[in-house]
Image 1 (cartoon, helix red, strand yellow):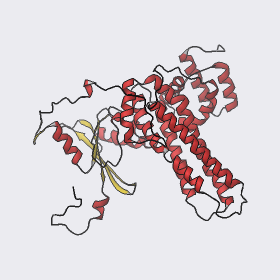
Image 2 (cartoon, rainbow, N blue to C red):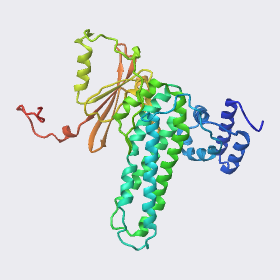
Image 3 (cartoon, rainbow, N blue to C red):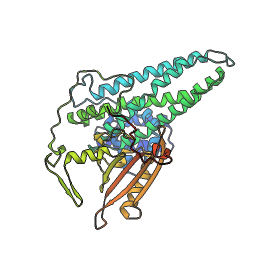
Image 4 (tube, rainbow, N blue to C red):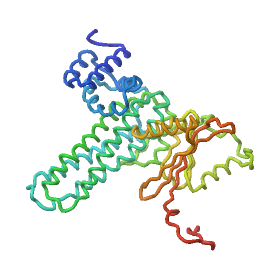
Length: 415
């Protein structure tokens, strides 16, 4: 094999074989040297293609995810920046906002490490060490959830339209690892009356691993995900992400001004029924405005997935339990869930399609609310599978009802 592989397909195949060797237990240093010898440079799109091919070849997503940080460390030395096909990023563009949020997160990481360093200088038996700065930095880091939500539900959705699915599956799993690490840190920081020596242990065993995981994801976003997205996504898709981002909020910083998204005029996204027409049903007829109002007034959330497993509709009630963005429309429902729960989604869909089951239900406590989630198989008159309807309802108040109410009484006063 030549010292320098210029062909993209050959580079991807070579990286695959080297990474497989790493998965089989190969020493990272030896793999790194071999990679440098065979592949002098690669870019984010090739790394994404390599991960996607590994998954297509049968390597489980969780296995790719478990080795992802090691892949990253091995590939860093040959990674070069993609020259974006899109124009220069303007202030306020989604990419600019993602990057500015990463800088703010890095600032919070630095503040947390400084707080830990201050405690490390104390004697182990020092009582009630100062934790305010540590806890404040932790509160700032928890804002990363907004950053991850926009990435997972908006950016990943658009990438999947271009056939780029591998990186999103792996990165979502890594996001969940960061979430779990931060959750463990939060539980540790709630402790009281611990001596400095105990807090030093928390810093070493809980805090630093969480910060490293967060920093590793920042590196992957900056050097793999965002450059790849700049090359793949269209101006209309960036505009779509920009318009829907406020639904999830911003992480530590507000978007700047300067970027103006293109106006969407895609006729395929317009309603097929004129506003003054009605759709006829066996039990009546409704106009588009009435249908929209009806679904919006229901005290529950609806999401419909068609027979090809693609999200086709969701209702927009004022108090949705789980957030939805229009970017998920047309997206495979499997890609709308973190990797750890995809197997359950697949089982429900398989059982519904095979006719083995028609209803699946769950109930959970979510943000101090008791939530009932049901999935219904939708079939035509002949029994053919049409898709799956998800019905989510906050039943906290219903569970608390007692006795009877027979007289008219409004719970809310409308001005």
